[in-house]
Length: 175
Image 1 (tube, rainbow, N blue to C red):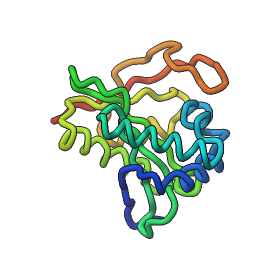
Image 2 (image 1 turned 180 degrees about the vertical axis):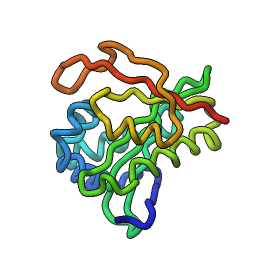
Image 3 (image 1 turned 90 degrees about the vertical axis):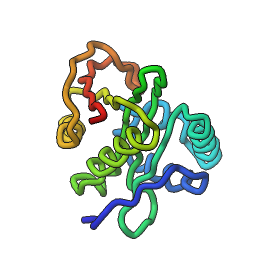
Image 4 (image 1 turned 45 degrees about the vertical axis):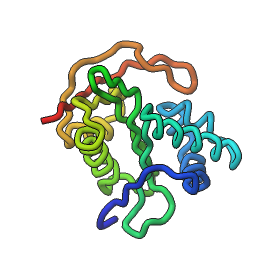
């Protein structure tokens, strides 16, 4: 178990480690992260995708943060702040953690940190998440981080294999 989680903005040197993590979890991630898994298939595509994510962070369109264990090794997971709507202002949060690091607080700590970053650094008023109702672990993370379920959106997400899923819509407001 990790004593704490190191969270850093995505940098170009993370491409190979992130690719390795995605390859190890590809079957699970393909359902909920179809764009990421489709765009990261080899070293070259991983470098290009990471470069695109870094450019999106510079233009404040999307932010990706890497989770590592306390020793700071290869990526253990990632947290994304995406779908930024500066007129509200709000964003969607999405996250994943490699199977080796699950049930150790990585996702919870990553969500807490990213929500704080969204409110205190980016100045957003709301962070929301859209989660498959069957993904009990992710729902538990959100609830433990103070998110409230705001509704169920029917057929609101297309998976990597083309299925349409309902999603539980959770939100958290800046206090």
